[in-house]
Image 1 (cartoon, rainbow, N blue to C red):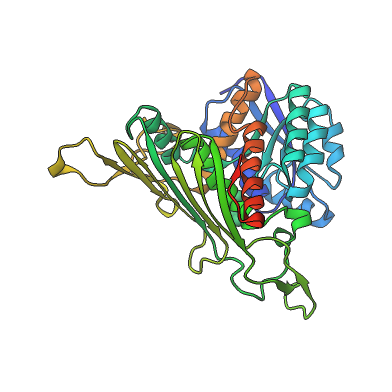
Image 2: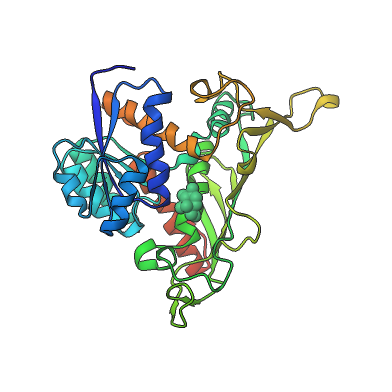
Length: 377
Ligand code: SOE
């Protein structure tokens, strides 16, 4: 849409999430009728050669090596933070003080204290702030939310059961990357992927009341770099499993592991309510399985909803029915909703407050794993 308004973006980081977000910034204005055009001005990273290459590969005008230059650039309206977790707080607090809208990757920060500081800074700076829990914007998840809100699972939810399973570090020879170091990552599978299924629980079911968790680090030493004989200590969890209770009385059962051999990025969840159930498998992300307990008994059964109709969330911007979408589209949906909120000066979820609430659940689970006690949120 020719709008005359342009929002200029500066992004800090350029690896996996940098690629996913760059694609989203480029595609959102092409596929969504947005109230502003998007200018990919500056991408920032510590390694000059790597970030210059990323600028060319990912379509950014310029490359920088100091994120403060983006904060100080009066042309930049939006700061997109896709860096390791230990840098989120400093970048977001500075961006908020400079009056820039902020999109920050999950987890929002290393701990609750940092999240509280970031939320306060965003509120003080009166800037739009969003944490990138992109899985909320899988059309099937957005449809699930609509169905639950319409009461199609009934007036009570009994169970939220979710598992996020990967296997990228199951090889003990996999090196000690930043995600395996608590001073940079904060936690392991817990803050990285358990954070996602906690967010989906908050989005679909409601707020957590109390949790009980256990964690394990299966491989405690790893090569400091690929093939190195020198090893370093793994200081984060490899897997976390937990039970919990939501404020609305529903029970939670969550598992997040990076040692689920054969599971590459598997997210499965099931929600059981008084009038029906929903089941979802990210490996079939265009489908939502629905069981309606109010159907005549001889016809009851889980059925597949192929979430590719124009009336389904976000789909009208893409393809005709049956032509599927993928992981990258969830970031395009996130960016499109964020841009609309920035232009309107309105809040868009999940906000930094959602990020803080997520962190509170994460920390309660970590405390529970240490104390072997139930912990209230
Ligand atoms: C690694 O576990 C990771 O890249 C996560 O950090 C992302 O949030 C997830 O979408 C894919 O896996």
